[in-house]
Length: 475
Image (cartoon, rainbow, N blue to C red; front, side):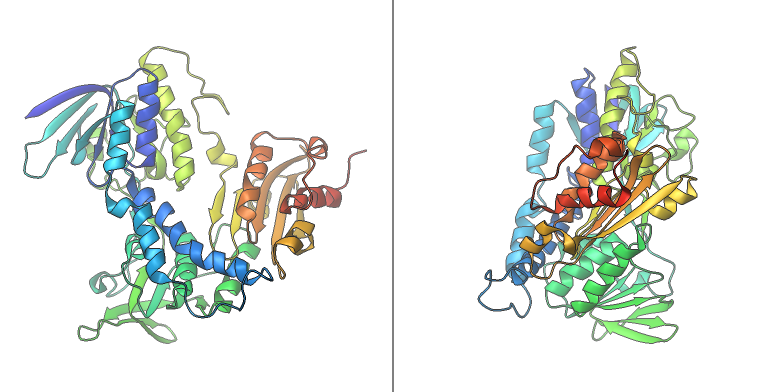
């Protein structure tokens, strides 16, 4: 049985694992990364990147339709689906990871293909098809960066009808005539938006409203837009069973108040950690569980095991996982070399932003961009808050952008500290407003100082001035 030794072993070569490995190598450690699928992970091939390509054509056409003079006539019918899918294939490199492998080589990171499992403290055994196992031993640490997978709810018949998950939805080579989507979260809303633009008849079945956990007006705006795009949105849906007709292939969803039939069904009801078969029992942990970590991403109760990205359930977002990965890679290197560890809030070796400043964009039409706390979350946390809402249609930059701009922005202010603690923007192009809000929250910039951050005219960023005017200038 082949064996090798490194300072750090990373299980999972998605963007999170890659960043942990890269930072540790830059810190002077030797690193091996283990991957059973494609180097680059979920985001590169089945999530962030392909999904945004699927959404882009519909969004661009909607923008053009609302800009007088951009089109000689109002667009009708679906977008050019074949062209969209070709572009998707380019973005995912036809699901070929050779470019990513080349990057690993250049970064000095050893790649071991196969399924990695913890087999002893600081040891990972990698099973490879058609070959003997490889045993990797870590002098310092092991980082589990295996991500998450779509959860399949316990609904009678669902597992037997070959449902789509986000992977099938973003990797499809043909568009079904009709699609029923279970769920009301980000994946459900984005895929409903994309497939509606392809001319597919889409039905969304959500147990509650859309985009739960965000400001209520965000989900309401997305639901309104989806319905305007001929998507049937049903909230409060109680699903009793799912079946697929063996002859026609059609899927039937049985609800408490009737039935819905579609060509395909997409399950987008949440995520589970991909930790069921990584040997957690070796470290005294429960297989299949989320991994509880401190702010340096080290698993509680261990001095050698780290869990970074989705597996720790702190913030299931690629950019936030990469943020965690930078801290984890740096602190693993620091601890290995006996260097000082900066693990205080906002320190070099911690992921403090996970708690107070997680940014997220939902690429629906309209876009939803949010960071920090919602008003309800801030109040629940015991903060004295002031909520300021503003209609983005009243911004000069919005009127020059579109003939019928619709959008809303909300600021959540901690009035005791006089700082922003949350912001939500809904409307076209609002994703680009998010970083300014993130900086204001992370930097705890006093509102009195924000008066001197003058927004350019005419841009959507003038919403910052309107917020400040509503709050009132300090005297």
